[in-house]
Image 1 (cartoon, rainbow, N blue to C red):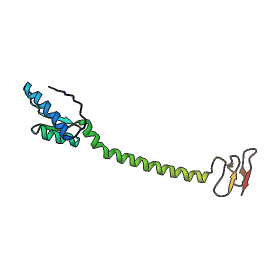
Image 2 (cartoon, rainbow, N blue to C red):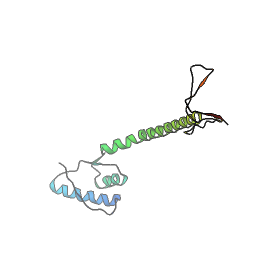
Image 3 (cartoon, helix red, strand yellow):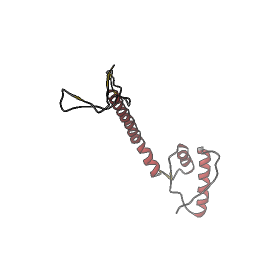
Image 4 (cartoon, rainbow, N blue to C red):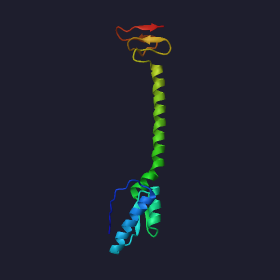
Length: 137
């Protein structure tokens, strides 16, 4: 049997929660229903309130919250690995940009190709597209 009770609380201190649990326990005792267990998200104030108001009841953690807490270290490690990988990839991209030049064709060695060029299969001859100029600074 499940029983639900709702009450507006101004705070979530263990004293306020213990009072709420004591009220629920009193109502259920009138019906002849014992409280065997309580399931919560494991907040410290809830743990203390259950221990105070329902010392005979077993207190368990909600599976969702339990798994969520168990997965936190894995999530943090994965997030850290992803961040480090992004740093390395950005570093590679930055080095590649320096070696290949930027969009204007600037290179780090002082040479600038104003239009794309390619080396011909013949290593003695430089093949450039039409209207291309090679400037050496």
